Amino acid sequence: MSEESIINVKYRLIEIFSALNIEELDQIEKWISSHSFKKDLETKKSLIRSEKCLKNIGKTIKKLIPFEGELDSENITPPTVGDQADVTTKNSCHVDEFLYDDIEVDELIRQGKLKRFYCADCNSRNIKEVILLSHSTSRRASQYIFKYLLPKDLEDKQVLDVGSRLGAVLYGAYYFSNAGSIVGVEMNKECCDIQERIINQYSMDVDRIRVVHADILECSDIVHNSDIIIVNTLDHFLDAEKHREIWRFFKKHIKRGSYMITSRSMVETLAGLGMSEELIDWISICRSNQTENEVFFSTEDNEESFMYVVK
Ligand SMILES: C[S@@+](CC[C@H](N)C(=O)[O-])C[C@H]1O[C@@H](n2cnc3c(N)ncnc32)[C@H](O)[C@@H]1O
Image (cartoon, rainbow, N blue to C red):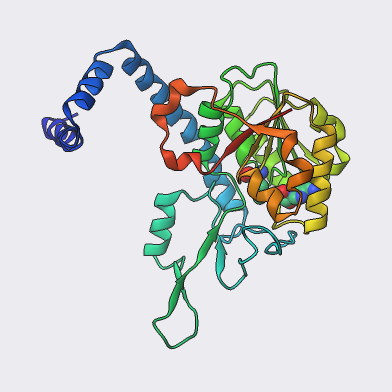
């Protein structure tokens, strides 16, 4: 690093430190001179390396699917119940968070490839913000799940992603954890082909990671044998009645003590489906298992993933 860059780093640090009071500054000084600072730095570097693998996978997938990130073989419709019942094809736009992070989304907007606003009643200044939806889990959310929420050692555990789509969660589990078995169940064949292709192209260990082309309702054994079940919002892909059926099926087959990770609070999901009374006592929310990694995550990360234990 040149003398000039060092000055730049000092400038940035001074900017941050000047906002701290004496006690806060004291804590930061202690941290920097401690062993844990060195350890945190090593962890951060390893996270950056793993993230690079996911970014490369994302680049490969971008070449395989349309820019809109939805395939012709998919039947995606806005849900009629729940917190996204106000979403329509007019007021929303799909941007896959695994393929495009916030910086890339800003760049797409700058290039005019993505519009952030739409006119609510043409010919006026009454514009509204477009709702950006993602059908995939972002790299950031994957890190949060595997490096903060779940226990560190998953060697003898099976991770299941329900509706694995492009495989974002599977690759996250592969690179950010030591999970012994990683399974994606996906009903769309084209999505399964993309995941298989990525697993082969990136020479992943097929004894560790696999994709099953099936409806999750046909996979009670896989569900029962999984210790961690990840469910990103399914409601754009099925109607409310099938969605209810899937939660009843999970209640029947997920074993006690398993972790369930969802991208929306279960209180909201169950309320939207009118199932609160039936299912809310089946699970309880739980705390993060890797608090030593909290330094890598912000409060915003909290809002993207929720972890429950099955009672
Ligand atoms: C929101 S996407 C989740 C993608 C992925 N889990 C992630 O977080 O990146 C939901 C996926 O679930 C699939 N899906 C919906 N219902 C399903 C079912 N009954 N069985 C298997 N897959 C299903 C859809 O085809 C879609 O690809």
